[in-house]
Image 1 (cartoon, rainbow, N blue to C red):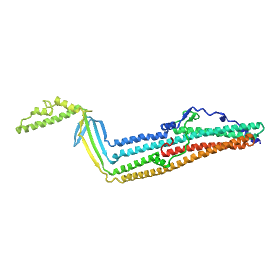
Image 2: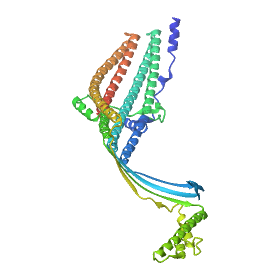
Image 3: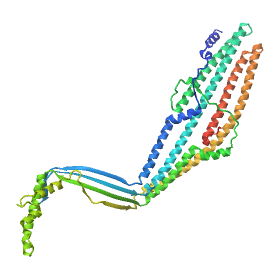
Image 4: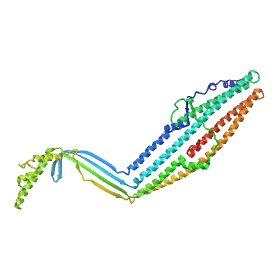
Length: 504
């Protein structure tokens, strides 16, 4: 008996939570707002969006592959002074030289892979867009499900608070009967135990409510801007009898299901890949064109003039020796002065003339921009690969297998979509009927509790009957809330399977 008293005393410690009013809610969040924020902030969805930019750049790169490649280069060089050897003991002093050059080249290549690349990348880009749409659909479903879970958790908190209120009333009634001698202390302690258990249940329900909201914000991709106990979910959803046409839903799902559309886009991309792999057996064409120029300037003007003078003296000597042959042939002689002048020497025949010196120095002063252009060049090459191992055949076989795998993936997803639509439609019908059953059960449990309370109040019933009735009501009300949100979640799941909203 003493042990019972100790247990009752511990369980009778009043809890503060039951006496507190619900936390003041200072912010609301609708489902549309949650979905919009999720599109902007969910990390996984943002990662998927990044793929779109890469796909667009790959498409641009594929079109760029059809244009000629242009390259331009320029440079400068320096060669030090020294002695050049020509073999057999012949050497020649050389001046240090500086030079510059540029070249401009165009290369235009045509082959099957380049011609097919834009079409292949278009198909891949469309597949990426469909995969993003599928990711968005998955995100919408995940956020909607968690939003409904949060609403369900809030509704369960209301059920738990109502149970706390009932147990508090039962405790007050048992205490009042005990004070007037119509009840026993056991009944009071039993009511206190019931009250303590409902307080703990409320604590856990509130915790589940907060955790559901925390998870909702995690799926949105942002932390809660305020404490979660100050956030209220503003949307509510009506329960209506399902009147969907299964055949119409299946037809819409085949056309609009995001996952199916994404796989079909990948299949079309794989088909293009097969065509692209076949082009490896076709010839390729390459066109090349180029422009170039250079400069070369000796840095030692004295050595350049000395070498030029040597050449001029040799030319003048040859001219003078040939002049006697002209006289013998009856031709007019050039004379020494004419030979000197033609060779660029002064009248003495020992030095370059001033004009020749200026011309030599001017011709040497080309660095860095007085370019000497090289002839324009152009070339055309046609290549037909005859045997390159079995690499091309391997790539073609891999492309065909990938396309076949894509076909099977589409077929498997189509079967999955059909099964999902049918099963989720059945889930909606079952959930709708369960709501009516659980509603009747809840009403019956409330009547049972009212009768038990009236019997206990009049002295013809027991506290155990009231306690059992209260537990039954709590379970019935909780099951009713669960049935309602099972229905809403089933509708959201069917919407995800079909690929479009079904609620008006």
